[in-house]
Length: 623
Image (cartoon, rainbow, N blue to C red; front, side, top):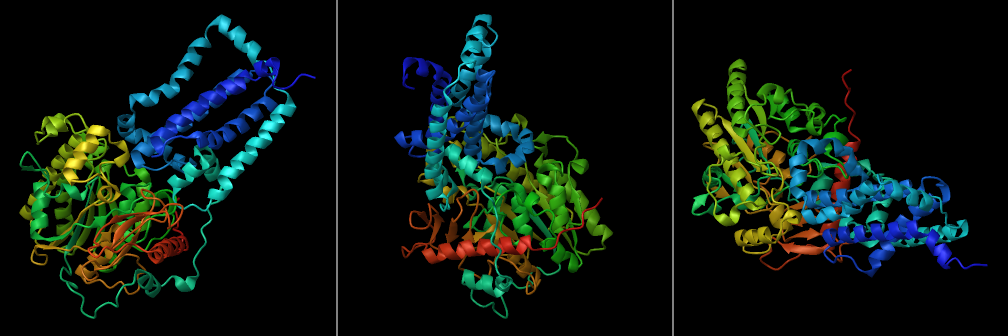
């Protein structure tokens, strides 16, 4: 009897071996990009099992056109690796099948995606190009048809299938409890992790209803009892509320100069004359800008998976628009893109906005990024706000504006460029980012002037904040990292990336004052409520009034791995759990660090928010 390892048997296995080696090489490319430690010998044991399980199934069930099946599987895995690489470069997150729910958004951000493609990624498609050419050659077709008809013995396939399943289980089972998704993917292997998330049930263990109270939330956050006369209570009562969400705006831009010229002179002026919170942080997830809208208007955390605009859009969400409507305000939101993008139409209904203004109102003139420019946004909005004020005979309004011209990939039209940059800022994302934000600041300055001219400035509370990071850590090349090192004076890191500004301006109320305490987007609504004199006694909220609280705990998701959080002492990034996590110092003059108790409290706060929102009543959908 011939051994399976005889030359004849090996010849029959050539497709199996060839495509195994091919996909293993592609997995090594992915590991080089995704993981700091890169590939090692263990990568072989982590990636081959899934590949072999699929190939064994081909050998079992494909008797004809076997080569074609191998080619299609090879193409599938290649596209999977490439998609994971691209997603990681943009978000800094390992993509899973959950991310594919947003595949319809890709066409809208195609410029951003194309900007991420480096030439050295493309060789993973080289074999597919070669196969495509060879398929049209007659002699090659005959050889390949002959190869396709050869089968490996069922006994050998059964042995390899069983061994592969056992190896895959040994990679997956011990690592399921890891909180950090990135660490989990490295421990399991990329393909194991993808299949694990495909079949894993995402059931949230709902908290006991007795825990869904404000006192329990305050206890977890270690908040002191509220003062009977909080600072600035009702100082802006009865004023219009204008919230401006600034696209991709990071805190390092404040007071930053290039060649002696301020990048954001108008925002710098606001910072010097009003309330400024330099240690304020994003809390968005997969929904990015739309998540920032959700958090700001609700004071809840983003869902465990997916954008809030889809996961929570079927709920009747307690919100700032509903609170203000009860106080006699009209409520509206302004965005120059189409309202269908990120399912905003449904999100706005869930939040209770009375009206939204989208591309149908603003038109498509002077387009930048996904819609009309910030100049168009502000020009048309201020005219509409004046009409609203006149129609309502002076009764207050709430208007949220979503700026967009400084959106990744920061492809500002040349005619909009208002700032000359040194050579080192040419043709790189850092320089493009600075130019785009300089234009956004210019448009904002014009809006402020218009508000003053039309008599809206003096009777309004204006809140400005960044929605999310602008310069992704994972996208920078060597020279761009050097530029960020010059800007920060240290290596660009996570706490720099997610640090966005919060500025509050109310003429006659706010004064030149900097609040050093840490805050997050979840804190925006309670802070506004205090200034407007609106009680939150019967509104469950997870943020806090930043004007009257100096200590904070801010759970993070998505852009940072699960289990990450900010405390007064540090930004903590989880590992498999707490013990192997990483800490970045914040306001820790005494050398304090985040504790395991902080870690547990942050996870509990997320669970309470998930539990509360998921149990809210469903909206009655319009037919």
